Length: 172
Image 1: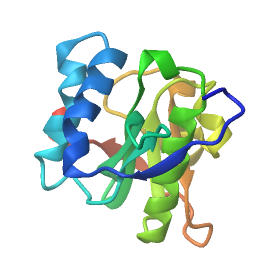
Image 2: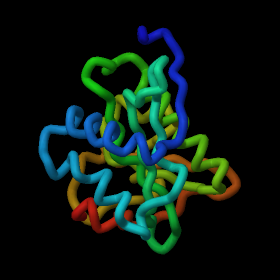
Image 3: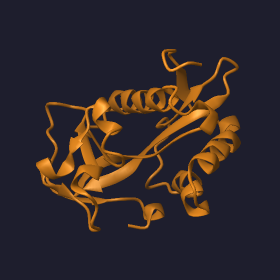
Image 4: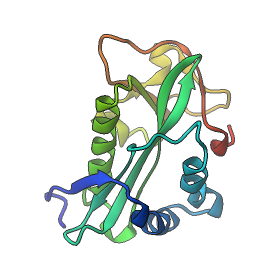
């Protein structure tokens, strides 16, 4: 598909898990990063059914993947967007963006309110993410201010200040 095409998206199925592993392995440079999705899937505190979304090609094969997992901002429940991965042959085609948008829409339907992401500052603002520090949200590790971003899915419940606590699989 070309960058101007729209992608179909859906929640992952059990049959997708090996394909998602391939996508993540192809997209991330280290085995530890590639193993993150499986580690999160195995963690009942982190995993939320229906928040692992794939962008699929015309044959319904996943080519992009986005995952939202449980985290906390202070004591308040939130979601963490990580990782987002796309097969190298489909990079810059919109597959990653489609998977992210589908994941955020699924989270909103589930009544989730807040999402944080530690990622590329030029990629995530297009989805409505802004600097987390503007809301008093931080991490226990030093990261560039523009790399930690936050988004509220429910305007009636603004973001709260606090330190992000990730699932153990993240190692931070």
